[in-house]
Length: 187
Image (cartoon, rainbow, N blue to C red):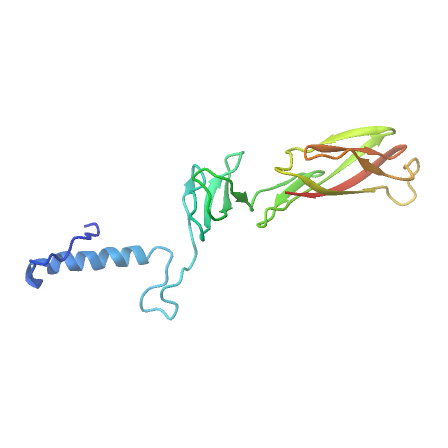
């Protein structure tokens, strides 16, 4: 029997509603048994862990509250999201468990909304454009680069310049054929 919020009624006697009251207590116990410590535990009232069904959109929040929920990322993988206060349903939320790592390029989102991206490349001399796999949502704050040569490697450029950077990518010049690494921070 499912929980019945309409018991007892003012006209009910204990004898007539006892079965319904017992069924309600059993329904409450069934609810508590999912991811919670039992009433008799020293940890009563606490979660053992939290499971959340995947949402199709951010839930929306009122002033003075936040929402923590799961929703699929662009690849269909469930991720953990945080929505700030006073947001509409399907409003902005921060995905802070998505990461993308490959051998050369990757990125991650931090709970604060900061986005980190990194990568590797090789120039053939002159200016080379690099496009991020995904653009920074709002802005690229800083990008750093360094030459990535092995000890004694010949032909490496003597310097590395990064310029013309935007939220979608940047340009790099090493002055000669050279491998390089980069790291970018934005939001």
